[in-house]
Image (cartoon, rainbow, N blue to C red):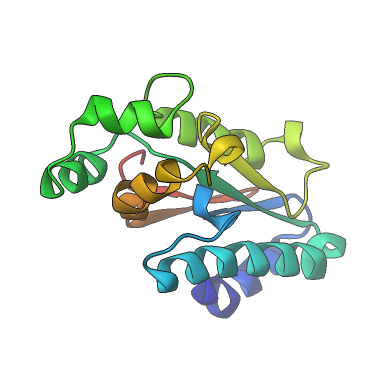
Length: 174
């Protein structure tokens, strides 16, 4: 995110109005978790930077928002469950009221929408794409279980820069 400030911002400002940036935060951006504090702090920071930058650059035609994914079915998530000896169905039962993990294409669709003209009035918004997790997180053991798995969701990101839009999406989607 700080590299954007240093490198992308000047290019985007030179393009004029109509640019969009989508940062990737986490469903843990909305509440605290017991372990590890640096992960929680970093995800809260992503939202803070997103909102602050959205405020600062809205008048210059740059829309900045964030996606807050929940448990997305990626190799990283599967590996985290395997390392912890967790049964995937048990994790789904604990983290999802809809009975499944999210898919990378669902995160990509959210990013594309945030970069589209359909979201032209959306600034500084943290869009939860978490299958309802954020609405029931914190119910005792549910949040405790989430710590062991959902923390592993932070993946490498690909920055796609276009004339009108810039999106930061998980590498698994790109």
